[in-house]
Length: 371
Image 1 (cartoon, rainbow, N blue to C red):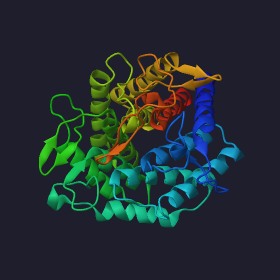
Image 2 (image 1 turned 90 degrees about the horizontal axis):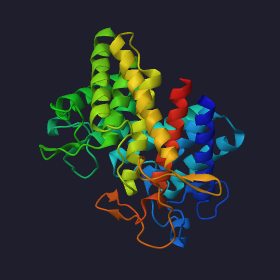
Image 3 (image 1 turned 60 degrees about the vertical axis):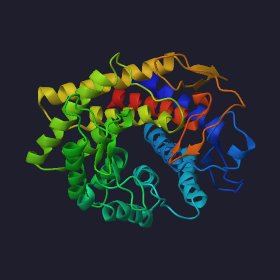
Image 4 (image 1 turned 30 degrees about the vertical axis):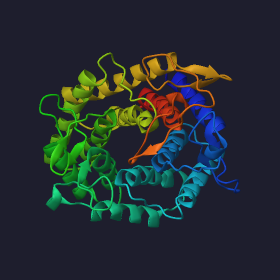
């Protein structure tokens, strides 16, 4: 079955590569993902800049290189890194800590598979997360710069994963996980709330909040001593069970449409796969958590594949993995950046985020089928 998922992941990669990847402003040696397909001229000119979508494109390219190392893809990864900084006005950073965390995670992985050093960039990004830690204000790190008092899981989760992996910042990552567990866990469902804003709980519960906390706790379970490890293992076991009960009641992860929401379920699948392949622990409960995580990924991937559309033999994934995908067409309302987030195109399947999420899911299915 692992070859089936390898083939499906490969087809998903080819679909995104052919439909979305192009030079930045026609410059040689560059590449970014056009944010819509079918696209308009403004899309191909990269007049809009969705920083964190491009970070996930880089992460998906790394997934593919780990699955099937190829010199051509190695070149694409290098071009994606270079072009991200170029389009971001020669900076690695921006004003959103969650955006920077996604890029940090992708960059750190990309340097390992390509051998290209980005030490300065990684140190710069790590400094952003270390310096923004604000327990005196109720955090956590904030969502964005500028005196923001919104401390949320989508910033602290991925930043914590990065710090756990990078340059021996495990202690801060551990503090971040403790802050999340103390502040953002729903006592009834055990799911992760979105965040706290000006001291008040923001009770929204998104799939990707669960995913990043699973990733953080799994990384810490791998990297801490026996006493702390059991604490992190317990949190993973509890959250995997909650995701199964509340966010995949039919076995298939709930989706969140297009725009930024298009990435949510794919991110959750990525870190469920990490649980399945990397969670330590020898107890029966640890084995159940790994098996449950694997089953959710595989059931979601089978459903998303079964409900896909096909154009020129390549998949178009649906914004919701438990219903038929809709073929996108040119025209109609496109994704827009509003109040710090990108909303959906009129047809969500048009958004790069949705197709990246499907590709990410197929890579996750391959990872758990061989891991």
